[in-house]
Amino acid sequence: MNQSESIAKLATALSIVQGKLSHAKKDSANPFFKSKYADLESVWDACRDLLAANGLSVMQFPGEYIDGTMSMTTILAHSSGEWIGKEMSMPITKPDPHGIASALTYMRRLSVAAVTGVVPGDDDDGNAASGIQTKSSPSMKSIAKDIL
Image 1: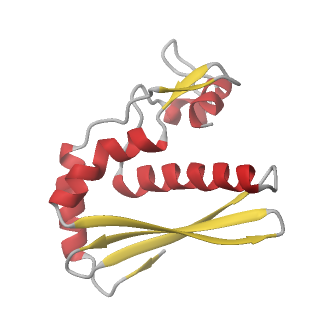
Image 2: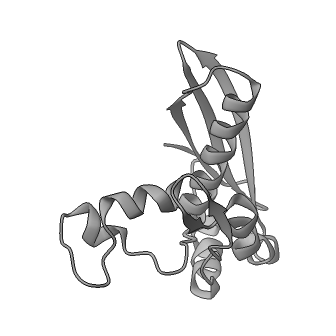
């Protein structure tokens, strides 16, 4: 992770945002897995107004396509000039414009949700990731459905 020398004002503003966030609505359908998921628009809808009201913005920059992998840098900036940023990368399964656009959208959604703290409704990845299965815990197969 990279950041400005201080992130005190950014951290204060983000804590205010996170105290008021609601979940992202799972209102998109994945026909391949027959599941619902929170798409990029839903993630943005959950945080856009709160970020702006607290002097925060998100910037995302696609990186290079190298050896079947695409990267993206996401920066959370505050009106004070403070910022934090991180690059992520992902393999491109279909190296054409559609495959690259799909991966970029996926990375944008994951990064915005991660940096702001937005979670989709009915999310219980912690139990599933640790192998704990309860009646309300999703299986690994259902988790894969939710994030694709």
